[in-house]
Amino acid sequence: MIPEHLTELLTAYIDGELAAPKRKEVTRLLKNSAEARRLFLQLKEDSTFLRKLPRTRIDKDLADTVLDQIKMRGLKLAVRQPNQVLVGKPVSTQRFSWIVTVLVAGLMLAAAISLYYFVLAQ
Amino acid sequence: MANFASKLLRTVLVSDHQLIAECLSGKTASFGELVRRHQDRLYSTIFRLVDSAEDAQDVVQETFLSAYQSLESFKGESQFFTWLYRIAVNTAISLKRKQRVALSIQASQNGQGGTEPLDFSEGSQPIRAAEKAEREQRIRKALSKLSPEHRTVLVLKDMEGQKYESMAEILQVPVGTIRSRLHRARIELRDLLQREDL
Image 1 (spheres, rainbow over the protein chains, first blue to last red):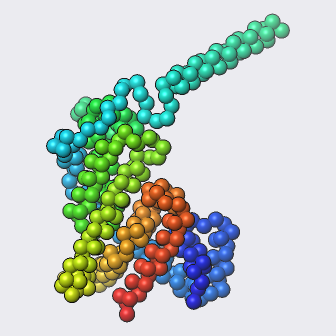
Image 2: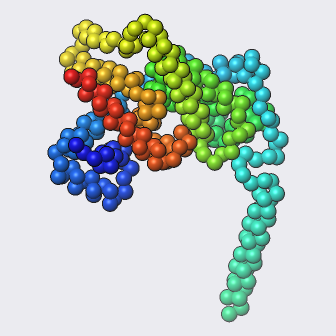
Image 3: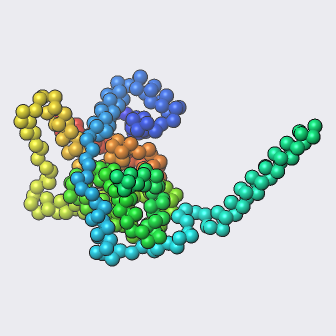
């Protein structure tokens, strides 16, 4: 009987989610145990069959049904104002980032022009 | 033609985040585009969880309606599809749990085991195709006997190719839970298939 902590390693190995040291441990286990090899092959085959089960496509377009249901059920969502952004940063932070970018670009341009005239003067 | 081209371009170039922003600004039609984009993939996963085209359609529809109502709460920290997946999987699991309870009540009232009979109508199929169909039937039957939680992790891992981390995010459990759940699911599936062989 294979201890549970080892069968857990086998299943994680099949899942492709083991780090290299643990993979080596599994390789050693499979090399030394016929029972582990048998179980591994069976579990691997089960996983392969699951992966090969055919995908089923939906036979209708739900978009119109969903939009109709939204109307019929009177579903509402909080309407966002146009100047609000979806993720994270408030507008003032976005504006600040732009100002910093412009300043840095300006400084770099000034440095490039100064270097040009310095080299020309040489 | 120009209309078709612009629609196609929009499908390719407009991100989910932009469509969500348009919805939240009052353009409900943009939600229809989100539905079209994600319905196939969502349906395919949910069908594998609930085993019924009708139930899968209902779950997917309810998922989109729930998503619409809680769209404001989507902060963009994960991909929109992951967020949708989460709603859909939870809806499907709840449905399966209710159905299992209803089936076991019905079975205890009728004095039956409640399992479906296998259908082995081979007709004029070649032997290999018939064997393949039989194996598929066996694995589907075994899958249907798993608990909703075990079935879900196997579907997400083997059929949807999700990583542990992504599954943990979808199911809102730690990665360690995903690992041990998958382990138990695989062993249980193996036991069920072995019992079928005896």
